[in-house]
Length: 257
Image 1 (tube, one colour):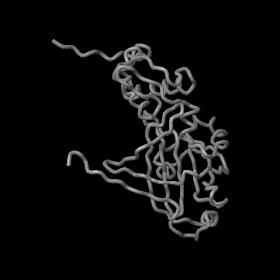
Image 2 (tube, rainbow, N blue to C red):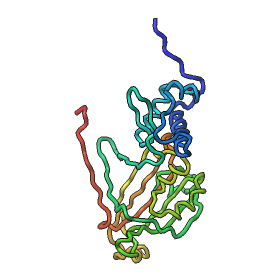
Image 3 (tube, rainbow, N blue to C red):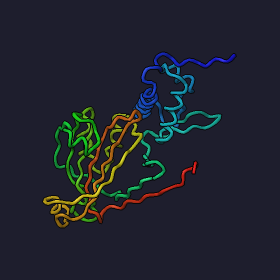
Image 4 (tube, rainbow, N blue to C red):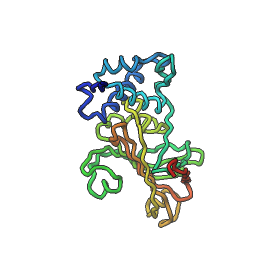
């Protein structure tokens, strides 16, 4: 007769989010230097005991940290802390399609206004976010310094109201991705980016600022940045003239075809 090990009591409620909570705890310890680069993390069993969760939850958390570049796992060695500030790389997928959007890496933010926003029904529908949710909106342009001072796009950046303390860092570090600042300063891993691309017409006065004709074609890129539990922490709503952004799709045959 075989028996199945029971989950710990603390691992039962909201078990689908426990691994995300543990992952955020471990990221915070790494970012704050309590788990130094090159050191070994405790074993799965030890982490499960320390945090009152199952080993299944521990494995899911470590898998996420490995995918994000914070740790590596080697047989006969253990789990090694690799970086406190890894370079993030994301695969954005919809079914079997990978959506690869290439935007100049040299673009920097130029924030022109900061305000508090509660999403009404229309804005919530456009951003695909909860009606009545509270955000801090940072509005401005995106500029490529190599091409002078002419803006290349208009960007509205929404961060969850709980992240309002990051506004100064976002303004003072225009070349750093907001998602990277969230990970670094709040020790919260960005696990997923969802992107929606739609066509739009660029109206005046935005057309004037972008140096294009009013009514000319543009692309609107809306990105949602989510933590491991699926909570949206950041939304960007960016409008580019159509000739300033490149969108590529890579389709792969499903294994079950």
